[in-house]
Length: 237
Image 1 (cartoon, rainbow, N blue to C red):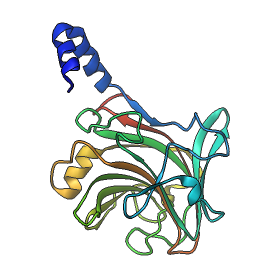
Image 2: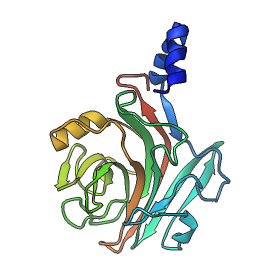
Image 3: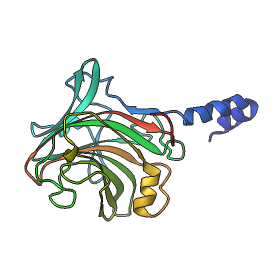
Image 4: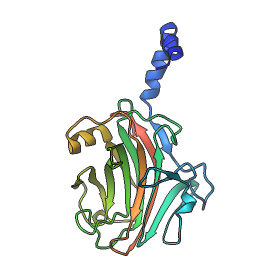
């Protein structure tokens, strides 16, 4: 907390009430409304394995790409892979127009719609995921991320948890329930971290990542995603 802000709270108690009210409201991460239909979501970036930041258009091809779609007055992101893998990310503080603190907003919400998921894929086997939302919390001294991956699975039931060491996978949607409909997802990220890692989550995650891949199955994925929000615990939908 800055000295000026602290002084303001002392001189004006209503400012403290307003600060608390702000922390209790949902915060938009991305609704994709500010971009040109057919174009890229320029706020999002590609982070290399060395954590170098690259613009998205360096990596878009006919076999792996994202673009903004307009439908019935709403805009959202469409992801597509054909035997490839892609990821796009926002970094807390540097790319966000906000600061994400789990103590204020422990929950993450979004909605998505799968048109096609990789056939024969499973988080436990041929590890393709038509769509996923990652939250990355930290990196070790070798640069390896510690993350939770929320997936739209081709085959596993909702609630399945798969561990890959520093990566924990939680299935939050499944093709077994059908495709083509918008599904709402809302997760208490702080609680999920405690459950899968057995310890308290760092208060400030590093990245949110949208992921799609079909390279193991050499198949296809096509999934839409929209309305990514940070939520206070137990706040309104």
